[in-house]
Image (cartoon, rainbow, N blue to C red):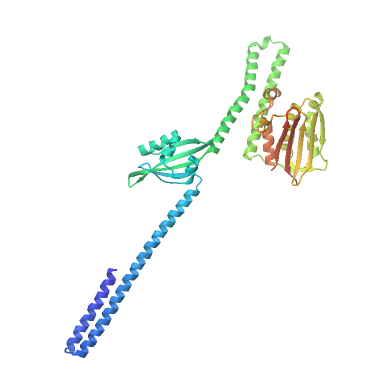
Length: 408
């Protein structure tokens, strides 16, 4: 700007000098003097006009730049606010004067506050209220696991400083309910497996102590009884370990399936032969109503495992009547039904029978040596085949398991 001003004044002064020199050379003749003055006036006017135009243009340019910067700033602020509102986590800034400067809707929803959120609204949650006040008072960071409406939120409080001065805290709240539920499931699983292992291990330790102390004085019948306990409990431990390995591989997706086309009728019959003696001992009828031409695309060993578990449960919990296995073609699936006339399952238990270590009849299952993992494994195997399983049951009228797998 100053450079332009100096240039315009230089031109005007130059024109003035030219006018003075011209007037002196022509001895002040009126005509010449008038022409010189007109030329000087025109030149000076042009330069002054150019100067004003340039100054106006620069003012307009600065004004436009200022407006652009303001608009850009507003645009960035608007975008940031929209982004913060769309975040699935709660974001909130509390000033050093304990005023909430801004927050997104997540916090309002959590506290059920429709309007402007205030710090006092957290008083109804003493734990979080205490941590917020402590961090504001100590100007320090903090964390808090907030349990609200059967959900868990990990609240992280970060002290914010500007030029070395504390200006407030930034508070974020993330829903970690799924992680807490997973942690609870893991704890429950550890407790369950510890409980399951304890029974056979205690039995084996007890028999071992008796044999080591009184083995020489025991009769042949007593020795056979104790060795029978060892065999039974060892087999039970082995089944439990095998089932746990299967369940872990299925759940993690590391178990590789070897699928081929098989006759469903042959697969059912092949599995049923393993239970011929039990069916005969309990005088139970077995009906296989499966078309011999019906083919399924499955892993033979894993589906044998599915049918073995279902046959085992049906035989175990049926005293009178029998078991019927049938299959039908549906629109996009093949439905396989295992139906018995046994004791049935209470409505409250139906939703839980696929849980790990869950037993509808704890005492009878333990006596029979079940691991409590059979149906959990069944569900995972069927899931790995992109299928589903459902159960229908009525007390004293039997149970039906229905498997649906994709039709090839």
